[in-house]
Structures are given as structure tokens and as C-alpha cells.
Length: 135
Image (cartoon, rainbow, N blue to C red):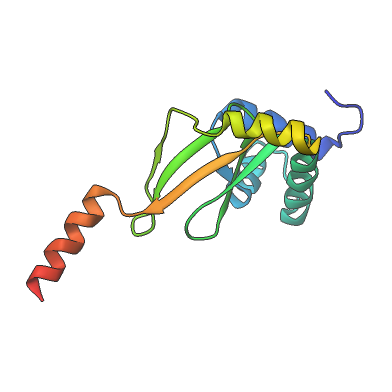
């Protein structure tokens, strides 16, 4: 535990550990309220921002613009469908060597990275093909 963390930041870390999945700030706000640890939505966003700058929390922006927050774990990579919003995790990481090179070349402290490809999943491709052939 970092001595400089606020009680709000510690509560958010605790919830992110217990749910072990990415969650929106709005859902985090509701989860805190459900656990009788209510705090204002602006406080939730401030705490998340501070935890991101510390390197403890990562944010992933979805196709619709909403950010999902989780504890920094291993780097995550996804294929995200722009139509249905579905997300398929990719197990391999093609950029670990690049990350090491960037750290070495720029002396940049990297907390995590994300790699995301946007397009259409097979179901949405099929649905689009069907609707195009009907017209």
C-alpha cells in the first residue's frame, strides 16, 4: 500500500481486486454505493486518474468511447467489434520487444501497453452480408 493514497483510492483498489475484471467509472460508483462506501462520481474519476498516473490502474477505451478500468496486470490485447461492441482477447503479444526498445532508447518508464484492433466480428459480418443481399 502506498502511503500517499487516499481512502477513496484504497477503496477503489480494493473493489478492482475483488471483482477482477474491467469496470466503468459509473459501475464502480454503483459498486461503492452497494458496499456502503459511497463517494461522489467526481471523486471516483479523480481517484481513478491518480491511480492511473501512479501506474496501478489501467484504462481501456471501448469503441463507444466509454473507459473501462482495471488493475495493471499483464498487458491486454483485443479484437473489438465496432458494430456489437464485442471484444475478443488476443493471447500473444507482438510488441514486447518494441516496449523494451522504447524503454531503452527513450528512458521512458512504461507501466503497461494495450493493443486493440477494431473491425467486425464474424456474426456482424454475416448480419451485414445478409442485410446487403436483401436490399
